[in-house]
Image 1 (cartoon, helix red, strand yellow):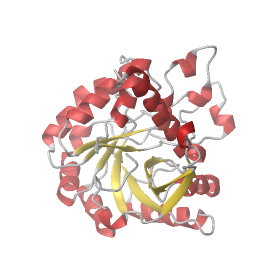
Image 2 (cartoon, helix red, strand yellow):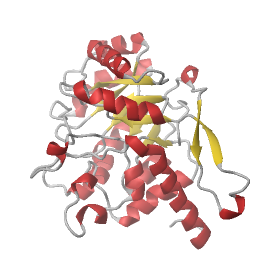
Image 3 (cartoon, one colour):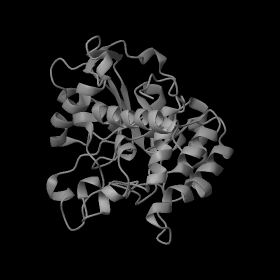
Length: 325
């Protein structure tokens, strides 16, 4: 779950660094164990933003992770190979001195993304994947794809060169309830895509529903998924009960408790099809706390601690009820 790069076939990038973090241990073992040393983890979904954000976001991200897949929905978006490489240089320039961190770059798919651009990006060895945002699905997605069926040649080129497709898996139809956008996307878009391109690697990012878990877990080996800490820790009550809590507003939106329990069970299963993806998404306070606030939960400052809290919930549930339903 914490990422070794197998799905992306970047085994040569496997981190050899280690980090030490304080361990939450049972009282009986407290005298014997007070630290755990783990392989430094990767984050397979991170929003560093750009410009003035970078000194802060790179510091938080690189303190917890040794590699991160950097999302391309900046302003303006990273739609070409040249833009991806330039963004990588800005990220590296913003890193605090002494931080060992490698940004893995992505490219933003548009209606105009060509097979030639895919091959060009792959040839650099520095563009790890291409991101599909349905137009209007989330922050800075207005340049996203309007009809994925018109990009068959581009997807075929990705399949041929081994370029994974990272997917924000929600429809944007106005007649679909916001809490149903993920299941509808799976049935109307994602499942047909997997059938059409059986050798293309797909990542369903930030899975939030039981339907999403079931789809990824039962899909062929070329389909994986990421899960955020905040979707493991919170359900929609955190956002809506007792008043609107804008810091819990994200897309995909927090779901009902039955879906959170499905996510917890999935990460506890040990499946290699699931990996850590924080989807840490910072915004200016004036944009987050407004009459029309931005979607995104910033978790980079304590990402591993949040995941540890989620796994501790799994341990508690398993010890008290035997298993997670």
